[in-house]
Image (tube, rainbow, N blue to C red; front, top):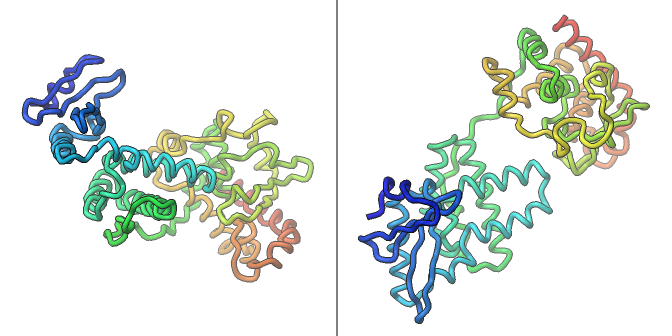
Amino acid sequence: MITIRSVEALEPGQVIWDDKVIGFGARRQLDAIAYVIKYRVHGKQRFVTLGRHGVLTPDQARREAKRLLGEAAGGNDPARDKSTALGKVIEEYLRYAEKTQRPSTYGDTKRYLKVNWEPLHGCPIAKLKRRDVAKELARIEANHSPTVAARARAALSAFFNWAIGEGYDLVANPVTGTNRPSEPKSRERVLTDDEIKLVWSTSGDDDYGRMVKLLLLTGQRRDEVGRMSWDEIDLDRRLWTIPDWRTKNRQEQIVPLTDEVLSLLPERRDGFVFGNGQGFSGWSKAKSRTFPDLEFRHHDLRRTCATVLADRLGVLPHIVEAILNHISGHKAGVAGVYNRAKYLPQMREALDLWAKHIAAITA
């Protein structure tokens, strides 16, 4: 009988077959162990991979093997369902999503669908039931968090809506009707002066440390700073123009650059400003390494900038909105877009005031 011990003892290239469920086996490849089934349909022998060891336990794989071998005994070919298995159709969807989603959004979509929903990848999408999704959703929440589960659920729901539109044989979206995990309420954390001083003094002179200071000084979003490129920066006019395809609201953003910001930019003048040629990645690891004892999110730096500008430095609300690239109130609509340039002097003045405030705190 296939057990965890017998599976993990396999040598590369070795296969063992279960003595309880005939046709169910495990095979060690170079970098992983896969559970498989072997059967005959219409006189032809078939092999189907069920999933990787570690994602599936021997008992889970054995149950799936019994189900599929039962279908094969009834004349249905499980290999035929491989073309519409969840994992295979997800690959098709990701090719579509990569062209239509922002890079950061696509990265999240890919992670949720390929990692969090991997245990269901071998199941044909037409056979996935609401109960299958609900059980897996509970596992994701238990192993990660309600936030991860809620976002993984949203990614899977979007995938199924796309699959229905592509003509896959689905009666309905199996995510619909499952309980939505309760995400924590939006945070309202604003750093104190002591915390600003600690963040500033702890941030090193590496790419991550400079970007943390830029997040605080400019009030822009994490990925906007992380993928800043030199062709967006006009050093003569001291402006940083973020193109519309890189902003959350799809509106071009122009950020005046203060002396303090310019002093943080590295010497090199080509490609991406930070990172290894593709922009910066690894925010979470860098934060854990740099600030092991300070609990905050990168977005809290943006909120701190906006709150102090408005509440303590007396900057008018529409100027704060312009700095944050928020399109609301009297800035909304076509007029707001065309009149945005007239706010640049006030934005520069506000960001200079904010930089001097930080300098006084950290002196």
